[in-house]
Length: 285
Image (cartoon, helix red, strand yellow):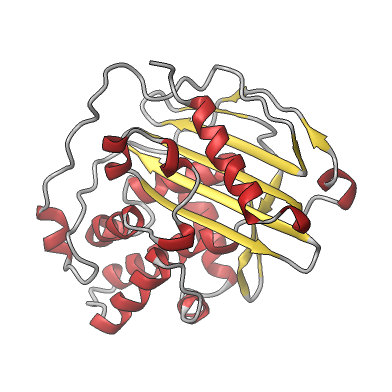
């Protein structure tokens, strides 16, 4: 956690570039049409139409400049070139509800590995956990995954370098922005949820709704929004700060944005940070 002095500082950051170790090949994951779809249903759905514009969606080498209070950091991962771009790549913040995407992925993958079919009740609970960010059942699945062991498994499976877990909490997982981008890729390419359930999970993440549907998804072109999977975190903690985490994964790219700042500024202050970073990274057409 960043100390109060840094949290109160005004940061002016510009884009940088780091080159990660290879994270594996990207594979397309088809979306299912319903929250209770079976793996075969998810695999049979055709891909969404291509964006209506030409040229690259993002230009991550252009500067990202913002004048905001508190801490913020971003990372853009180009899966096709295996290139990472971003600011303050090693600094971490907590995930809050963003980690629910991993909780669901880890549980589903392990079910698949054991040749078990999740019950309709479990799928409905996982769907609400992703789409509506319902917290009621999250800890139950996190415990079934092995608690802190699950976070350590995420670090290993997804090739994360700055992430640290906390016993008895998925919400307090500390991640750098570039680890968020790596996790998003790990979900998108099938490593996180496994071959049977990746399509189902991505469909749930594409259908996030309500107060959790903010950040990158708000400024992407309409056609790209349809194919982009997201999971965000937002919480005003007892440390007197709002903690915001934004994760998005699309066709050949992923994005992670982390922020925390004085609680008096409200949730929308951090939401705007996620939105504005994404907007500045988009290629000017």
